[in-house]
Amino acid sequence: RMGTLLSRQSCQARLRSAEGMSLAEFLYPALQAYDFLHLHQHHGCRIQVGGHDQMGNIMSGYELVTKMTGTDVFGITVPLITSTTGDKLGKTAGNAVWLNRDKTSPFELYQFFVRQQDNVVEKYLKLFTFLPLEEIAHIMEMHAREPEKWGPQKRLAAEVTKLVHGREGLESAKRCTKALYHSSVEALEDMSDQELQELFRQTTSAELMLEPGMTVLDLCRKANAIPDGPSGYRKITDGGVSINGNRVTNPETVLILGQHILKNGVSLLRVGKKNYYIIKWLQL
Image (cartoon, rainbow, N blue to C red; front, side, top):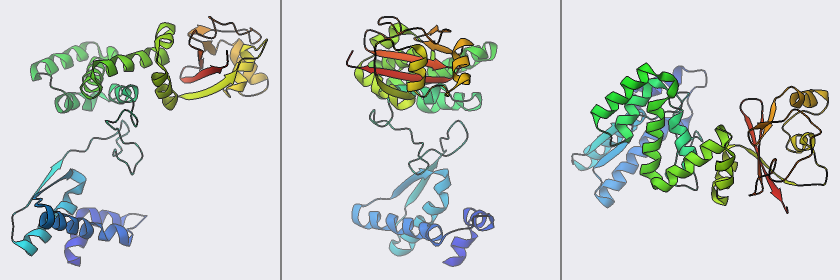
């Protein structure tokens, strides 16, 4: 009934908001309720599970199925897992975290959990790992003494990545992390083509041809890593650019194989503290 749908807290909040509520949004609970009825009648479904934001929709389904069939059905809601900014994770929001490696690489999965804030990391250790509660308590005690080490986040990321992708996936995530965030030349050289492709998804990348006499300045400009003109030139001379973990202050330095370009045909360019560029060199 209209009154039932209008009385829902979620509906009231949307109606009072500046954006209002579309007809499609208003009818969604009725459509989801009919979905539950169809699944119950044709497939014997008696339980619907969803995030706690789906409570109203699940209740609509419960009411419809019990009225139409007289059968007891059930709804279960679970706490939402949110992003580091507090936003809901999901396909619609475009920030879903997938178990499929082709959609979320082991590196991206590891990084998602290692970035979690202190106020949720203990809960996530309990939700997503099989660690004993006593061990989780010990991890949090150590974190209180040494918060700068991000111990719970690293343990959470390691446990979840190993659970989803196995030990090999965890090692892959750690290699990518060392290469990108710790400028590890060894890790970058040891990375497989698949890992490089996964790293390309995470950060800015470019494919370039090595030309005779090509300089650091040429590289930075071709990768669109610095602005044109004097300000880009100064970015290098002021020490704001590094290649494979080594700072370069002379823009006219000619690129050298084995130093600026690694044996696997890759260069890791960093501009400033957080801007990374992976350069894949073609036809070396």
